[in-house]
Image (cartoon, rainbow, N blue to C red; front, side, top):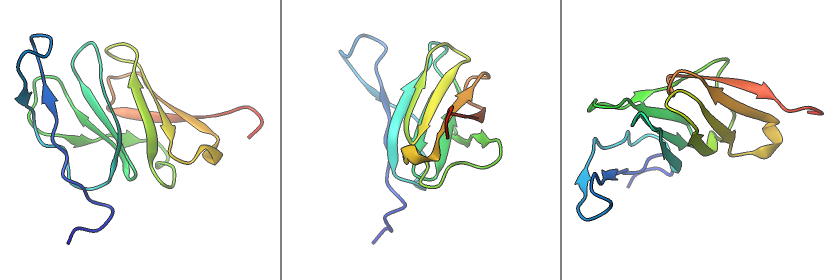
Length: 117
C-alpha cells in the first residue's frame, strides 16, 4: 500500500464553464495535496506536504518548483496565484513564520519572514 506521503492526483479542466471536463497531466504522486491554484496565464501550482509542483501553461509534464533556501517542514497548506506571474504560498505549519512569494509564474519561490517571528 502507498505511504502517507504519496497520493494519486488527477486534475481536470473545463474550457466551457463546466459543461464538459478534460483530464490534464496527472500530478506527481509524491506528497499529499493541500491546495491547487491556476493563474490567469493558465499555469497551475500544487501545494503539497513536500513542496510545490508546477504545470506550465500548454505543457504536459509537472515540474518541482525551486524553493529558495529549501521549503518549510511539512510543506505548504495554501497556494494561490494573483496574476500570471505573482503568487503566494503559506506553510502548512503556521509557526514557520514565513509567507512564500513567486514573481515568475510559480517557477521559483522565496520566503519572506513575518514581523515578530
